[in-house]
Image (cartoon, rainbow, N blue to C red):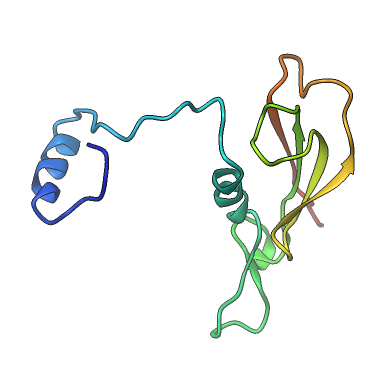
Length: 123
């Protein structure tokens, strides 16, 4: 069922979910995400601001939701259109990838795209 969902689709989708039937989704090649799609995923690892809170919060579990996940992206030249090959650091405050070093090899053991998460833990 590609495209937007309207009011008439809701009962059918709820029935399918209740019956455990899969709901079709738009198809695309998951092996080649666009830079915008990668950005949507990475956004959940950045800071969120709220007028109700004095400090920005992070989406990951940490004391007070204050400590961001450190995220590194390793990509070869074909992994994500518009992303330079190499090792990148995801900057959670500015929501951007910072190229740390270019790469002469492909990412990971089989090339493509590899994400590495590190969590800072305190005592």
